[in-house]
Image 1: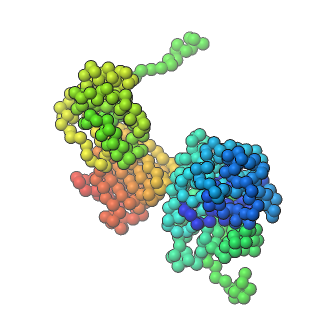
Image 2: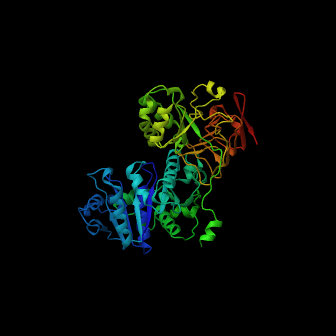
Image 3: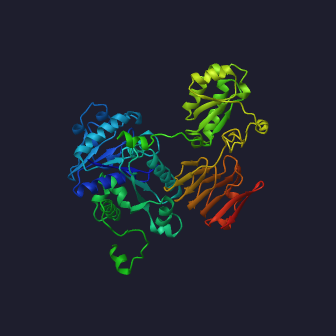
Length: 269
Length: 249
C-alpha cells in the first residue's frame, strides 16, 4: 500500500510544483517507487518542470475516464529510477476529477508504488480538495509572508476536517511545514516572517526551509527537479527535507544569515 | 444466560431536563419562513447544525399552515435542524404533527414568556429558546466542549449549552462561540463570542490575547478598541452593564 502525500498550500506561486518534483525525485532516489500526480487539471506544469512535456501522450483525466490504462499514462523519468509522472490534462477542467475516478486511480496506483505525491492546484476548490482528500500525509508549502501563512492555516483546517481520514474517523493526516523562498537577509531586515514566526502561527512540524535561490528558477527552466542539482543550496535543502520526511534527524540549514569570511568571499562557497 | 440478562437491564427510561430551542413561527407563509431561516442559518451554520427544535405554532394556529407541516419539517431538516415536536395549535395541528412524526406539547401558559418580543438581536440568532418556566423544559447548561487541535482560519467551533475549552491556539480568521465561557490556553486570534444565547455572566479567558473581536451576550468590541498594552497578555473579558471589560489576568 502506497503512502499518499499531498503537496498543498492554498496560495498560488509558493512552490508547490517545484516541491512536488523535488520531493518525488528525492523519495525515488532513496529507493522508493514513487509517482507524482498533477492535480492541476487545465494548467498542467509538473511535466514542464520535470522536463518531459513532450512525452505526455495520455494524462490523469484519460485514466479517470478509462480512455487509457494507468501503464499507458505513467511516464517513467529517465534520470531517476523508480520515478513516474502522471500528467494533468490541459484541455479539461477540474470537474473532470470525479470522486470515484480519482479514488479508483489512486487505489490502483497504491498497489504498485511506495509513495504517491499529489501536486495540488492553488485555491481550496475542487482540484485542491480532491488532491488532499485521500492523503495520509500533507506537506504544506508556505512562503514567509502573511497572506501565504494565512492561506496555509486555512488549508490545515480543511485537512483536519475534509479528508478521507477525517470522514472515516481514522488518525489525522500527518502535517509537515515546508517553508520556501526563505531569505535570512530579508528576515533580518524585517521584510519577511522568520521561521519561528511561521512555526508559531501554524503550530506544525517543520520539514524543511528552502532558501530563495536562483538555482530553483534555473532548474525549472531546464526541466530538472532542483533536488538533482547537488551543488545548489536549494537542492541540498530539499535533500535534507526528504531525509527528514523519511525519519532521519538533520539540523536545519540556510535559516540564518551567516557572514562569509574572507576565505568564503574569495572562493564563493 | 437469560438470567444474567435479567439482572442487567438493557434499557432504562429516565426523566431529564434537556436544552431545547423553541422556534416560534410568526408568519404563516412557508416561503417567508424559509427565506428568514436561510438568513439566520447562514449567520451561524455551526450553531444550527443538528439543533433539536420545538416548533411553536401558537401565533399561526388559526392559519392553515398545518397542511404544510410536512413541508415545513422537510425545510428544517434540509437545513440540518432536527424538529422534534410542535407546541400549541388545535386538533388539526395535533393530527398533522402525528402524521409528520412529531410529538405535541401543550401551548405555553407562562404569561411572562408570552410577552417576550421576537428576538431581533443578530448576535444571538437562536435566543428564542424557552425562557425559564417551571412547566416546561428549560435552557440549562450542559457539558461543554474541549478542543485539543488548533482552530484554523475559516473554521467555526460552537459549544452549545456550555463552555468551550481550547487547548491549542485559535488562528486569525477563525471563530469560536459558546453559550457559556470560553477558555483558550493557546494564543487567541480571530473572533471569540461567549454567552451567545444571552448569558451576560459568560466570560472569555485566554493566555495570549490577540483577538480581532470579542463578544459577550451580543455586546462586542473590536481590536481597534483594545488597549494595546494587553496584546499578547493573559486577559479575561467580562460584561458589566453594556460595556465589555478586558482585564489583565
